[in-house]
Amino acid sequence: MLRVLLLTSTALVAGVGLLRPVVAVAPRLAWSAAALAAATSVGSAAVLDVDVVFAVAHAVLAIAVPLTLRWRAVATYLGFALALLLIAEAALGHSSFGFLLDTVFAAVAVVWFGLAAGQWRSGSGLRPGPVALTAAVALAGAGVAQLLVSGLLDRRLVGTARGVTLLVLVVAALAVLVLTVVLRDVRRRYRVGAVGVLVAVVAWTALPGLPQPADLPVPGVPRLASAAGTPVLVSPHRPGRNLVHFPESAGLGLVVETAAGPVRAVPRPGATGTWAEVDLPAGRSDLVVRRGTEESSVELDVGELPALPDATGADGTECASAALGGLLAGSPAVLDRCPSAALSREDGGALRQLVGYLARLPVPSITVVGDDSPRGRAATELVTAEAQRHGVAVREDRDGALVVVSGWSRAAEALAEANRGTTYLYGVHLAPWLLHGPVVNEVAGATLPLRFDPREQRSLAYGMTLAARFGGEPPSTAGFQNWLAARGEHVVGAVSLYASAQVNVMQMTGHQHRSTGTWIPNGTIVAVSGPLGPGDG
Image (cartoon, rainbow, N blue to C red; front, side, top):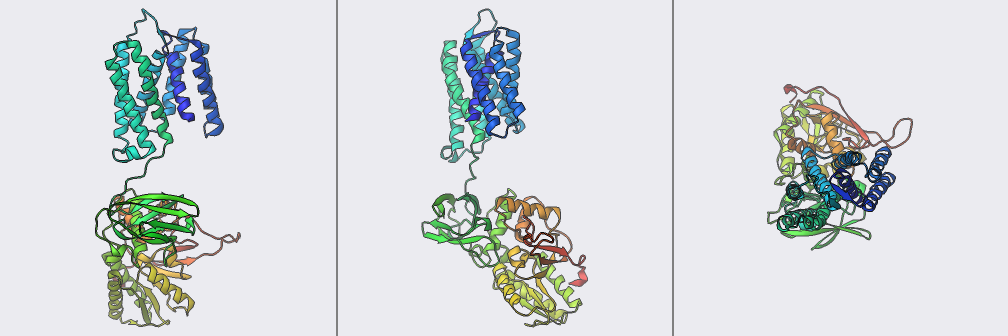
């Protein structure tokens, strides 16, 4: 509201001063507009983060215009300066094209309000008819351009506050153009058209204060939205069973409701935050999220796609994390397979090198923990075959090493069980995809074969982005790979061994140590080997 009052009143004052040589304006109107502009400028400094000196300068300049109306040249210069200030304030932080559109809106408002507010002087050389037509064409063009670049040429145009405001802006601008062409009386053009210009300018000034509508849901693309004041992820966003994920910072007590009924969001092994399994009907629907008496909804559109069972099963949490990585990079894509669907060549190579490294220690035996997923079965077979090739026994034996190649949930359960028993003499070793805080922190320390450094700039940038956008969510290997792929990058490099360790307290302070965006919450991860050569595998 302050922005609307400030910019519209400033446009009138600037027009009065700028056109003073050719238009006579009643001093009372000029003083009223100047007083409003000055008051809203000072008020903005009082309640908003506005530079006080800048706000006072604006107020002084606005008051100076009616004070100097008797000196036409001085009023003109002051009006021109105020018009430039209006453009600068309106276009602050906008792109070059946005700056152009804001300049057009501001210039039309200044000229139109200035001409409509007073009487034109005869013999001044002013041609108000062509000026009105030029201003109307410019206003209509800017309004249509604003709509085209908004990206709201869909149902959001009539279903959101920003869309409706844009629609009002365009209709008002086109109405001014039609009136300018139809009305023959030039003075009536300005008097009647001033109403349309005012509506268009008010809509234009209000746009920055209105939230940008969320992107429309796309079938098969996991839905990232906000509900009940917290981020929410719906994956895989297909008909049938889906996972609804909330970050740990959202706390407990969230309930998700669909047409099938309410479901409470609860923790899942190996994952952070809370999760709810819901059934979604085909096509459009609303997902209602409740926290106590608070209630909000998320618009969904799952289309008619076939279900994706892997995205909601035991490895559904990792699948959702992978999808979230691509969404955060600004590259939403249809989720058609999960990381657990196959063992990648890179991960297979890393496991071979891990077994080769263990054989060189040498370890007497390896205990392998897998699962029934295609990746888990393939990884178990690969590790077993490599161990046999190196002459290492594969059996359940705590005198050897534990190698976990399952998904997150099975790994978290196996590590929690191992943590309660006797320590494996040659340590705990995890597959690369198990680099996820809730999994790794189930044991005091573990080793992972990785092709990237979790402490490098790209890794930390992903972690910080994820934590900022999704309530402190810890990173994952699958999410990092999708985040990089969406940016045209990939995880490449030799395999090195990294060891994680929990750090429960900070030295000297006694406060719990948790750095947002790091890969191991309440812990650390460091390289414990150089690049493993081909001979290690």
